[in-house]
Image (cartoon, rainbow, N blue to C red; front, side):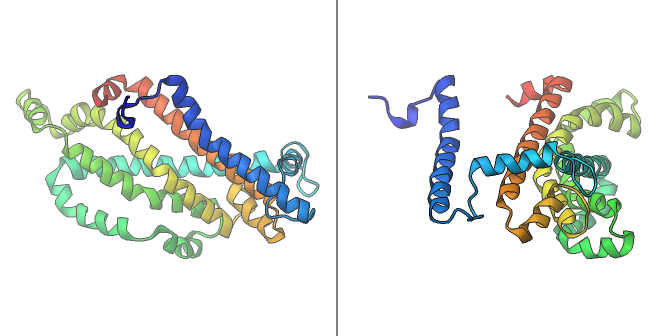
Length: 272
């Protein structure tokens, strides 16, 4: 009899085992929801799937009487735009700082301590300062995302840069390469796939900062809508929005993974 530790499920079993926890959670929710609604038809804590479907249909396909917009898609577009801009800024700054501090010892001595200290500052604690300095508009939300994840990306790129074999740098100098040529032609090509991996790992924190900023000061966005309807205990809106955010986070991570494989297949092969 094969020991459990040696059992490796096939592809079909992998899929079924992966779906099993989700099916169990859905069944538990449905049973709990039916039980609560049977006792109190006006219960809002665990709405039925039909109630959530009706609410989301109204928000996704019926224009708002106040603004005339489809709120669900407007919230999604606003949040994704803020997240994309914040992450893009963080990736550019993190790449620049990480490569310089990782490849040039003089920059590492001068800026690594500062980078370490900045990475320890809770970004949400800076939110009131951002609101005071740049106001309550889009800039504050994008800045919070950028400030929140830039230190993580920079430190990861710094570490990855330091892992590049010194022999490569010595050979490049032997061939007459200048410092800028070494950074651009030797270091940067090897770091770019690592940058995409660092962005993928930082997206969870990016979503957190986005939702927090939208909840405090915004007029649209996924985080704004969740915190707006919570005062009415509208779980039929909150739960679908949370599920939608989770799906978006998964899709963004999946697309970045595919992009990494397409642009840098050699890196993926080396890792495997």
